[in-house]
Structure formats: structure tokens, C-alpha cells
Length: 442
Image 1 (tube, rainbow, N blue to C red):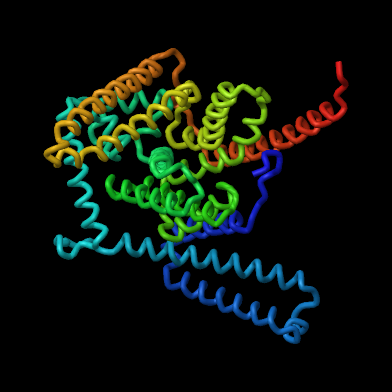
Image 2: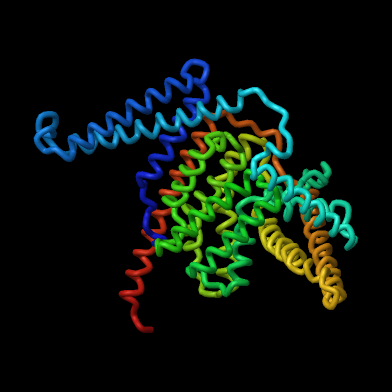
């Protein structure tokens, strides 16, 4: 992606906005506009779109109704948006019908294959958790590892949650896009590191979905894996890297699968953080013109963290009423620590079959004991760092309150800030080129 080029508004972005409006409308008008009415409206909209298509194919009929092709294009765009709006409303209303249906007691035989898989994965996950206890990983160290690697936050106590929240690192305790991306990158590296190799991408995606099954299909992990799958298909089709258009495609697909994702906080946070990184990371990264690799790497990590914070901070204040003042600094610890912890947990899981082979059991146990010791040390150091950060003066600003109108105004300011920053980078780039093209030898 050209860093000095503005991100264009594509039809998929417009459709994602239409779909969001239809889901909100259907949810809050359910008592007055039921699923049947949404279905009728969708059928009418599709019929009108079909008539418009016939007009487009038949020139004689077209001349009876329209004088300019622009009028037909506008009508087609309107009808396509209307179809999407009605379909989104119908799917949302249908989901509400299912949630209001009376519950029933089910036996194991009557469970769906997905439900049986979830139960089996839960049993296997409990076995792995017991394995961690055998390596003397207990207390809140075990709780942090279990939350980060296995999606089980049940062992976390209030003090640990509060220290991670105040330090601005609570997102690493829930399996989300960061964790899924780390697992995906791990298997890409293990399989040769070729990001555009179809076998590598396919096997890495299989590993990612196996991990999602292992942790019990938590919604945030399913969303992240789905987004990564869509991104991988775009990568294999030799399209450019992840863009707002690809993100909008993932957004539309996931809302069609489950419209209630729109009202989930983690869903909103994940998409806003990725969108903000795509928008703000290139202009922020270009503000530093240093050529030192170490400085550029550190600045890149800082730019990614700052870009994500810009997109999610208003939403965090709206829902939680808190600003973590040191979150940009703790990200330099959180991301590498999460990467190491997940890599070591994956290594323990991959080495566990060696314990069932008599000739290799002793070697496998020795390796796993040392890996577990390193894992416990990293977890303790990370937990201690975040706890100390939460005790620093001014670590967080609490008891903030935002109205919905104020939230919308803040995001309007964020978009305006992006436009200003992109324009400023364009001006700087032009000045930089002019100076170098007229540089005098001294």
C-alpha cells in the first residue's frame, strides 16, 4: 500500500455501513417489525433489483424509463443497498427469534458435532492444564498462562485483572487477534516462512483453526481466525496486503453469520484496532526519517501501538470509563511476552507425545521441565512488571463518562486527524523530494 496515498472508500465499506444500520434497526424495531415483514421487504427489494437488471439488458425498455445511463446506475446502487439492508434486517430478526425460542434438555447423542467437539476440547484442555501443575506452575502464574494460551480466565483473581487493566494490557489475557496472529506466524515459520506459499498458508490455517477448537471456540478467537482466513485467501490471490477493503469484507461476512457480533465489545474493539492500524500506522511510521534499523524497529512497534490506541481509546472510555496512561510503554513488554509465552506453550504441546514413547520419554520429560521453568520465569517477570506499573503514580484516569453523541464526535475527530496527518505527510514528502532534487554539492 502506498503510504502517501489516501485510503479510498470502496463499495464494501459502504455496504458494511448499510449492513450495520440494518442490524441496529432490526434489533430495536423487533417488537414492531417482525421477521415476516423483513422477509417480505427483502423479496420486494430483490424483485425490484431484478427488474432493474432487465432494464439494463434491454435497451428499448431502458429508453422508456430513463434518458441517461447515470440514472440507471443510481437506481441500481440504491436497490442493491436496499436489498442488503432488508437481508441484514431479516437475518437479525431471525436470530432474535432463535434466541427467544424455549430451551430444551439435550442428551449427548442429540448434541451437534460442534457441541461434541467443544466438550472433547474442554476435556483435552483440562488435561493440559493439569500437566502445567505437574511442572510446579501454580497460582496466578498458572492463571495468566491458562488465560493467554488456553482462553480460560476462570483462575484469575481480582488483583491480577486489575493490575493488567490499569497497565493497559488486559487485552493479552483474552485470546484475540494478537494471539491468533502469533500462532499463525509460528506455523508459517515452522513450515519454511513463505507467506505466499499455498501449502504453507493452508497448513498454518489448519493449525490456527485446530487451536481455536482446542480453546473451545471462544467468539473472539473465532472472529480473529475468520478474519485471518479471509486475509490469507486475499494473500494467495496475489492481491495487496491487508487493507480496509479486506477488513470490510471480513466484517460483512461475519455479521451475516451472526449479526449479534455487532453489539459485542470485543468485536468492536478488534475491528476498530485493525482499521486504526491500517489508517494511522503508515503516516505515523513515516514521521521518523531515521535509517537506523533498531530505531526504526522500535518506532514501528510504537507506531502500531499508538495507531491501535487512537482507534480504541474512545470506545474503552465509553465502556469502562478508564484511560491507562502507560499502555504505550507496557506494549513494549506485553507483545514480546505474549509471543514468548504462546511459543513456549505450543512447544510444550508439540513435545507432549514424546512422553508416550518409551525410548524418548526421559528426554521429552527433561526438555518439557526446562521449557516449563523458562515459561514460569517469563510469566512471573511479566506479571510483576505490570503489577509495578499499575502502582506508579498516575497509572490510570478513572471514572470517566462519555455519552453516545460524545463518542461519535470523538471518532469524527479521529477521522479528521487522519486526513490532516495524511495531508501533512504528502506535503513533507514533496518538500523532501524538492530538496534532494535541487541539492547542491558542498
